[in-house]
Image 1 (spheres, rainbow, N blue to C red):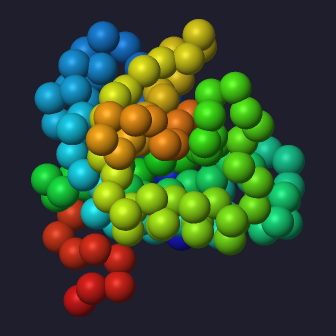
Image 2: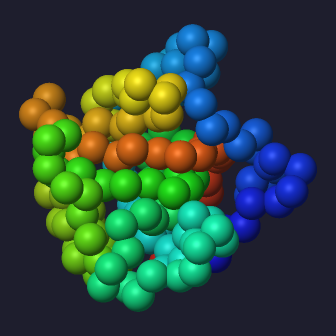
Length: 153
């Protein structure tokens, strides 16, 4: 599993961000918005488990995952809740969430928009033909480069 070090940096020493400010918003718009999602790595554990114990895979609602974008950017997302609708409850269960996201990726999905919660947390909006399909409410993130999709050599 990817780990977050105590120096505030995540894998590959990319800066770990917890809140979305104007500068980060502009950088994300310039580097990741409009990119097709090419792959996913969904971790069985989450950094959010550290505070209060690890939920069972069926009960998990916060996930750590890596989104691989077409422009060879990797979004490492920590403590992420996934919603099919902003008014619904988050997806529950490691296998179910993984299947839903992978099905969307296989049928073609893009990182279409970014937004922020009232607490300035990052929200990624994944869409197909500009119709939102999945909302990711992210507690922490890094942006890195990738060379291979998961499972490739």
